[in-house]
Image 1: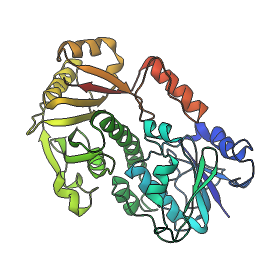
Image 2 (image 1 turned 90 degrees about the vertical axis):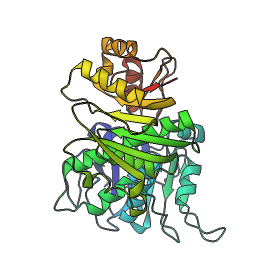
Image 3 (image 1 turned 180 degrees about the vertical axis):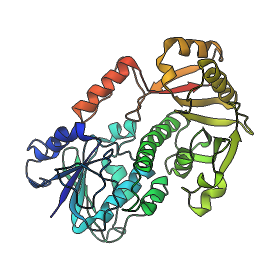
Image 4 (image 1 turned 30 degrees about the vertical axis):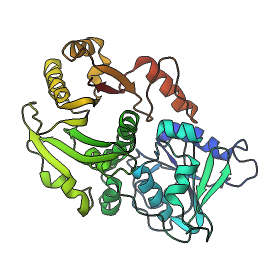
Amino acid sequence: MKEILIHKSDNYIEEDRDYYCSDIRDKHGMIQPSDNLVSVTCDSKVFKSNPTNDQICSIYYPFEKGSFHRIYVGISFPLFANNWGAAFLRHLMYLIEPEGGVILPVYAERQGVEKNYWSRSSLEVTFQSRQKWWGMSNIWAENDGVMSMRIGKKQPPKKNSSLNHFLENISSSDSNIGDVIKHHTNGIISAIVEQIIINYFGRTKAVSFCDIGGDGLLSSEILMSDYVNVTKSTEIISEGVDVNNIKKYLPSNLKNKLNINSYKSNQVEFNDQYDVISMVNIFDQISDKEKINFIIQAYDGLNNNGILVIKDKSFNNIKFTQDLFNNLSDNLEHSQYSSIVATKHNEKKNIAHYSDIIFNELKSENSTRNDVINVLQKK
């Protein structure tokens, strides 16, 4: 019976395997993998229906139902406790045999909330299969930091997520690595943006959201989130982008809640003010002066106490950041979030992680603040 272990990339294989295979985590052999455990990754360009350790394959291949006995989610895999993460876990449950299970790491409640990671309670609420007190739960606590999901009496509800469109349309004859990377990356950035919204506005306050220069993935995912109250979402696209492709990630009942505007020559105009505006890696081959002017325009499109969420390599340059801040409001508040986990960086405290490798990556990110998520709040 085949068992697979999902890794962020092949750099994390040894540590991920040790997490589940050592007797430290599994003293009683409750989740002990077989000797034939096969590794798969998120970034592999190899798409095969029968993965082996001879050649590391992609987890995003459209495997048939019941292909595996057990699926282990490595501690390196960026699996967040949001709609995207729920859609991915539900997909994994489709891939296991009736007597199999999905084994995954879960964090203590507070750590889970801080990172937007799965904790036991959030997992049970989302994937509980029993009705009232009848039937057995399909969420089992195994050992410290580990839980398993089993097929229960009824299938977990299907959460709205942009990932559903990808999973439902990918085929074994057309496994496009570009689409895989795009959707996988959106799973990470949408979780971080979602956590930022929670930290600034809470889970229930009505929030207007706008993404600039994207392809509709982020604006759609945030609109569909069950964890924030985004009542209006807008995608501002550059001219030449096919508008028909922007709303395809949304279910039909939500398509009218995503507005689409366009801009040209880096001159963005807003038809409204927003609480949150995101710009993720959209500045390509333009001067720093043009970038600053563009960001100023976006900043002016914020409501009071609104936030700009920006990811761009220009913020690695201290001079660029100083020039930008000199052209913005004196009341500006600047904070930085990790690009790896959904947590705000604090120079006095490193972000903890189950993975030693990722913990060291987070320490380095905290020290250099290169390629992080920048949040500018308008006061």
